[in-house]
Image (tube, rainbow, N blue to C red):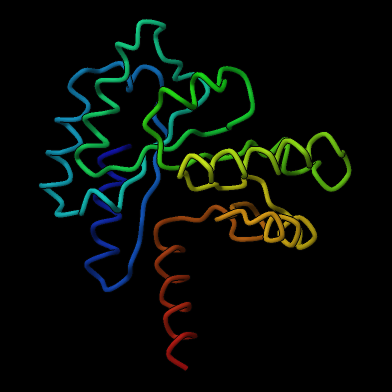
Length: 189
């Protein structure tokens, strides 16, 4: 799947669009010591700039207590690949995890985002996570944005990016190409 994502992102960029690709990493994939070399080879083969690729650590991709899992992440980061912490605020994504992982981006779990307008504690969690991430020089993505009220609240909290059904629904590769083409035509008009 990672190779297909890199290949697709490279094709889209060669067709004249500035396009970044994000791919979730499973714990099993992350544990492969050869992963950085494999990623470097794929980026070279498909001629995709490493800065166009973000690898997301899922909650299940917990790091070993001894920090041995950090080496592949550090090597990926040194290649220029962005690292993201997915589903931040749930399960194993503690402050220690945030401190150890060389992530450029933090994605706040949709459970907090979807209820932030109704539950004060979730709003406080979102607000403080954005402030903490920014103070650490990280970019913040809000997951699960499904209505304008939530998007407006996130804009007011200086959240960097949003994803969810309000922004765009899952689509096929061909559907993505059509949307990029329509977006480009809209900017030119």
